[in-house]
Image (cartoon, rainbow, N blue to C red; front, side, top):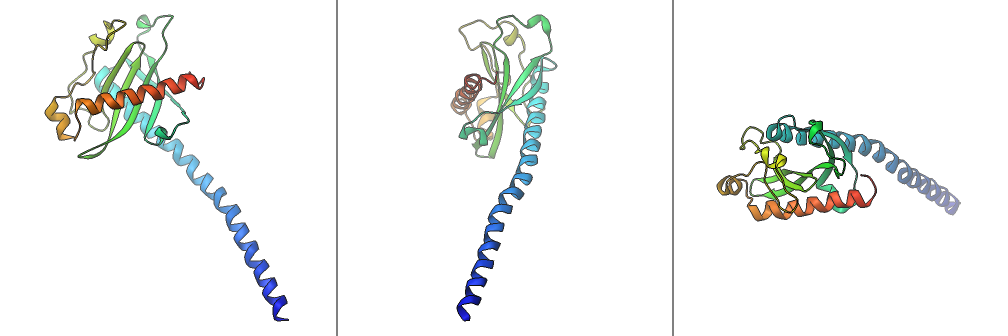
Length: 190
């Protein structure tokens, strides 16, 4: 008689554990999915703030480009719309902004990069709008094919050091951000 009660109790416990492991992923999905959309929207707003600060009305952040890579936990790729139609060309490969979380002495810093045709530029640090030098927009307008022409907000070495960064760090993450844009293109999203 004891064995029957123990078996029934074990079966009831197994059913409860099974229900828990079935319901838990469903609950986590409904919690995580809206928060991911909210995260992407917040990154889009931060990226637009940097672009507005440094490029006035030259770009508008369009849509989030999902990339399947582990780096996307610390980065996001957005397509950009050029607000000056006369600057668009037919062979234009598209314009993109990448926001990347980088660790400096001051903690995590969101760096924004622009990839527009042959121009690859560090646009600025999100959250620090108004604290960095305005962009030299003529760099975009006069860029030539084989040269990296300009950095939108070329902070001084001391200003970068204050954040725990240097030009090598900025350039390192620019290359990583370019890889994300290339992966978007390879995955056929662009």
